[in-house]
Amino acid sequence: MVVLGIILLIVGFLLKIAILWTIGIILVVIGAILWVLGTLGHAVFGRRHYW
Image (tube, rainbow, N blue to C red; front, top):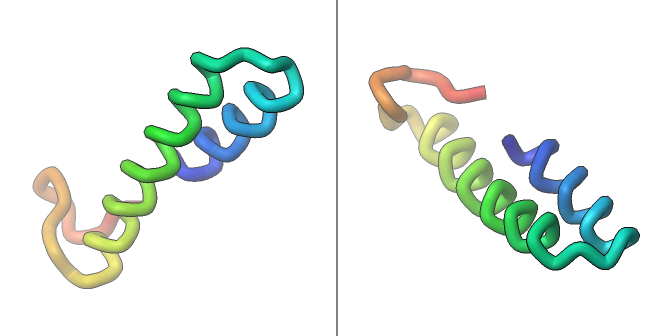
């Protein structure tokens, strides 16, 4: 999710498409939160680990 967000950020910046930039930011933030929760040992959506 984080990687997809970064790709969308780059594509949105290069092509000057604001919606891709916005979606990229949202995906990076959500992906980072899920990644941190997963590494801390909290169950995320019923899973012990979130990759």
